[in-house]
Image (cartoon, rainbow, N blue to C red; front, side):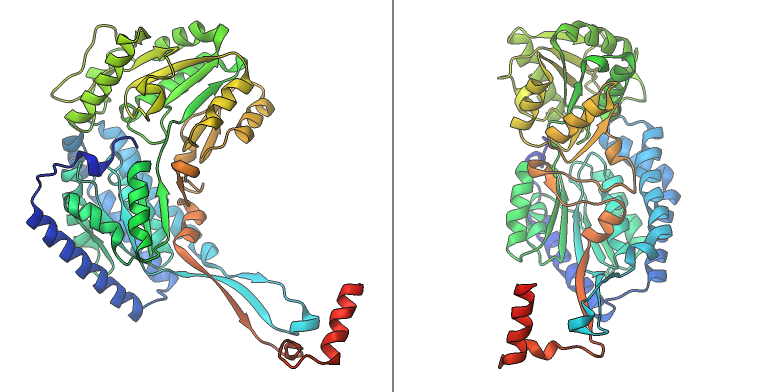
Length: 485
């Protein structure tokens, strides 16, 4: 995400408050580590109960969650809050409960009976311990609680750090978690900039951070102090590539519709579109038709998170306009609503590559439309940039689309759709390169938050004594036979 939490916090926030928050965090981690040592292998039944409690917590707080999200964003559609912030993690929880036994099953590995006799070997997935989850502002409950499903499924204890940009959501989440879980099991740490800086430097057993690449680097540096393994979800400039057969009404509706979700404030939203040069105007016309009349004044439009972000988006448009770029407003003549921070979507057609909209992740209601002369050129331009979190390819020729997916690397991808790779609870989700590392969602999340442990149980009839010195004629004969055969 281009809007990093740490860069937007009021730097004059109370130092004393943060000092207390950091002390409380350290106390919570100590409590959770002690509790984990006492019960390092919670039963699958207990884990399922914990996951169910998390889902029940969210479902039971529907109205309060709706109100908190709307308060923090200035405007936010209740239906989308229901779908993503509540039903999203609740559905993820239901799937995890149903699949938990399969996820946790040890993977048996074959052994050579000629050497190891009747020995058995297996890879076991075991709890890591205490995990920190640094959640972003754009999906405070979905990412605040969603990964916790797999963390609990793996048998861990968790501390959630909400973003300071969503204080109403953060305070509500802290209250709900405290009413649902013991502090030594799941807890929430709320604080300002100093807490955000201190959080990754704690002795976690694993750390998940969702945010910007810049802050992700700082998080990784902090985690390195204790050699803490990290999962980073970092966004990027996710492109949509339209092949010649992909310039259709359906593609335009998918791209514009995805861009309108959260008003572009989604790490897997479409950042820009690449279209064949001779079909540039065709796509622009289709995109205008796909727009929703009066959307920015409706309850379905999400407000930009803070005034500073609104100013940033307006500055990006002003720069493009001053540079002579062609701007196409999907709601002509409609400006931003300062009170709710809602603003309409604007296309920027064939922008100069030097513009900020071509260099920075936009994370708002601007959609650059970039022409290309050959598909190879479009793919090369994408692959020359940092790897995005998502890649979206449109066209009738699925093999041609697949070839683009293979050639242009990204964290995830969709063909003839956008962002669905992040919506499926059973599909591992994550980045590549600067868009992140590691995966959560489904069994990939369970594995991410588990320790893979190889275990051998010795049997009978083995010959492992040949591994011990001194190495005599018997060992030499076996070695020579192996080289000869």
